[in-house]
Each structure stands twice: as structure tokens, then as C-alpha cells.
Image (cartoon, rainbow, N blue to C red; front, side, top):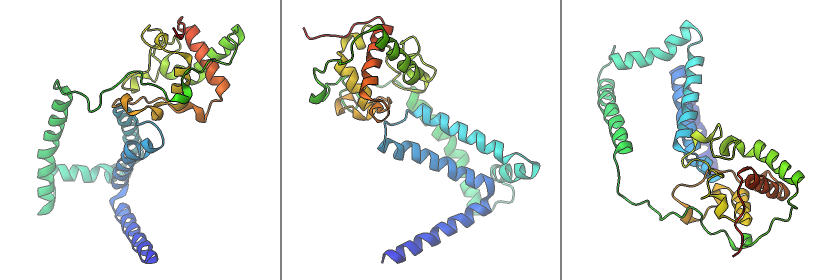
Length: 259
């Protein structure tokens, strides 16, 4: 039974390969863009935090630009790439079902763009799907932890260096949430200088958030999940604690303590 399914799957893949070879660069490019979108939208979130829509769009734009450059290296490849598009849009040599398909594309595509623009711009008074808590409660294992690293100038300086290497691309060299990659995220990275962020939190809370990242948020942290990586996979605990010290010192804030 399994052998038969594998054989049918192999035949199907072979047919798809033949169609792609016949379609040329354009067909392969379309498959690549669709495959990339499906990977970024549905597969990658299984292993890390979901990517923001604008970041996915950026990756797709860069991919399309690369495909266009590759497909227009020579005059022959340019004709192979743009020829099917021009013939489809102009209706040259089309009969029957292709004419219907062209008509549907020319009618439905503007309607789809208009509807998407309207849905994005129109104000909504609907509440979010989940009631969101900006600072959800951490798991019990992280409650009340204290920083085991001595708060010395050397450790603070090392923490700032680690912050610059791993955190500043998003949270900014000035700890203000305006790093070079910040524009790609919605919601934006936290501004640690703001008195409403880390000044309201204990060091143990930051330790949890840095270690577990966006994928570690509970349901009350939805629907706008953080895109922060799960740093426990890359950074030892000692580095995480030093980064926390560097964050507070660089942002000119003090961690909240038990009252």
C-alpha cells in the first residue's frame, strides 16, 4: 500500500517537473514565490514566533526582484520570462478557456486589491479576538528569581556589549526600540527608556522573556505575539543576566523590586 502511494507521488512530482520545465523561468518563479510564502506563513511559525506580515512581504519582494533579474539576463530569457505575461494580458492568440481566465483576472484582481485596501484602512470597533495583557504573568519557575551575577562595572559593560551584539538590531543602540530592524515588526520592539516598560518589571520577568521569546508567551499575550527569538537556544544563562543588567543601566532605569 505504502509502495503504491510512493509510486503515485513520484509520478505526480515527475509531471509537475515536466510542467515547470515547459513553463520556463516564469512558472518556476511563481512556484518559488508561492512556496516561500507558504513556508514563511505556515511552516516557520511551527518552530519560532510568527513573522509580521510586512516582513513576509519584504522577503517576497526581494525574491521577486531576484527572479526578475535572473529571468532578464539576456534577450532570449527576457522574452521567455515576459512573453507569457504580455500574451496573456493582451489576449494574443487566446481562445476558449484562456479568454475566460484572462477576463476573470482583469476583473477580480482590481476588486481584490480594492477590497484589501478598504479592509486595511477602514476603522473597526471590534475588540481583538483575545483580551491581551501587555505583561502577562510568567510561569511559576521564573517568579521571584534574583540576578546571580554581581552588579559590577565590568559585568554591566559586558552586558551592554552582549546587548549591542544580539539585541540592538531591534531594540536600538540607545535602548529606545529604534534599531535598524525595528520597522519590520508590528508591534515594534520595546522601548526600554520608556518608564512603562522594564522599569515596571522585575529582573526575573526579563529573564523569562529573553529566554523563551515570543513563542513562550501565554494566550493572554495574544493576538499580537512578540517576534523576539527564543534566546535560550543561543545564549547561556550568565549572558542573559548580564544583558539584563546592561539594559537597565543603558536605559537609566532600575528594576522593580518586591514591595
